[in-house]
Image 1: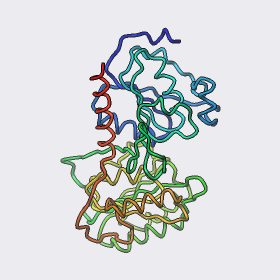
Image 2 (image 1 turned 90 degrees about the vertical axis):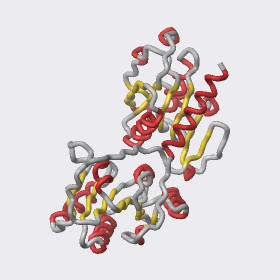
Image 3 (image 1 turned 180 degrees about the horizontal axis):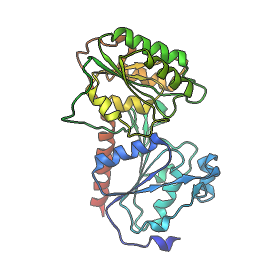
Image 4 (image 1 turned 45 degrees about the vertical axis):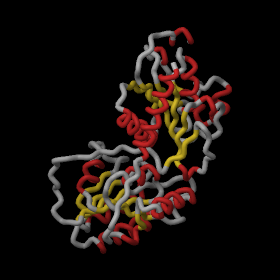
Length: 330
């Protein structure tokens, strides 16, 4: 296998992605900001992926990958970029299969993994409470795509326009239909002159989706609904964010909150202990305390100052700086 990787060096990023939408979004957000040539290694998992990373790594780090065809990688990358627990054993193994040992950057702390010190940089959100080390950097939120649109006609005449992003279940924390009915009705009551746009997520329970659709039938102020689990059309989220004056998001999704807090628009977070873990609640409170977001109770109230988090840019600058330092040492 080692002979397969005795190829010419080439300045590009080898980005490893899997089937988790959040992981993919983080990787593509960083790639966009790095502005470097890249190749994608899109991996699928078999049943062995349920085992802890430490076990997978003891047996080589590749056995949980389905139909891995690493021989298609023709050149040594400058950088390996991965995200999420299950990609870490593969990325860690690939680093030492390539000649020259490319720089290895991982997003999200890979729990129960071996040889973390072999990874050059690990970026992990501060709410994960991972102790900072030389190669572990805490971030506020997670990398997220930033899409600034221009010269697009707004089809919604009734203002203010509110965009509501709804997450879903995670672990023992369940997002219930009654909770979302309450949230939507509060928005409709307060935003009685405006328009409401709604996007759910792949984690949103089907019962919640049905409740949303039922509410929309009797409320003409709900102008647009997108369900990633059901709709096969192109995801309109970047357009919906562009049109909206107010952004409301449930507190169970760190990735959705991180994405919205990049825009120069008021972000109102709706959260409680019924559907949000302590980790998520602490994250929401930290963003609110530092002025990046507001509690839902402030909905439609004027914001004198709106701060934006620039996690994606900060991570990308750190990566580029480290790579340049490594080049200067050669």
